[in-house]
Image (cartoon, rainbow, N blue to C red):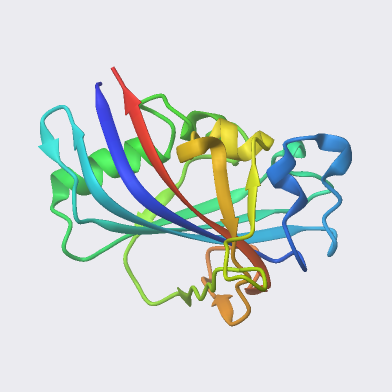
Length: 191
């Protein structure tokens, strides 16, 4: 059951600017549309699960939470794995992202109805642009509930507006577009 992944993470959210769920505080999770939809892109640089190489894989996840907060659960999630993944890589990545192998995704899996399902297809597009200040320095959030729970490097994520991101999957509760988002790197490891 040992595994590890080092990947770049891009998150987009239907909230206008900075998804309140990042703070991990139920009282602050006021979803500005009464629901939350998110699309994630993960580019695995290196990884291994029980000796199987997972490096070079790309994944996307679509998540939908009906509200009123993320902690109320009842979410729907779908996992999309790139066409180049072998059946063994697909199996291992599905188990990791369904929280079945422990690690940070185990927390999220408890908020989603059923399990994540996996497929590959053209269901959406993720666009993200890193937000910087006048000096060109990244705008970051650090030590928030999610940056800590998802074990991002330096417990930080860079804000990245995601206007232009859209998702349409008939097995998800709704089609959605996103406006806010974040970008981070993580190194997950379960021994």
